[in-house]
Length: 106
Image (cartoon, rainbow, N blue to C red):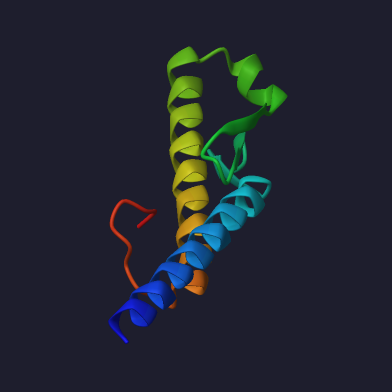
């Protein structure tokens, strides 16, 4: 009885691991966007928490305010990464039924 229970738990754990791997691949292909300065700077990140694009409106470049541009890029990048993390966390909740799994996306 105990061996069967243990075997069933192992099978469930392996199945969960496979689903998590597939989820990471799937979410890794999704993207999120965030902007700063009323859309003056837009950053796109993927589910692997990689920045895949940065778009800067020409008006910002003409203003030649380097410090403002740096701040806008940082703000948009941070927001894009927060959105990507939230995307992964939401997808993880779907698979785990809301159970927190240590070491995985919060």
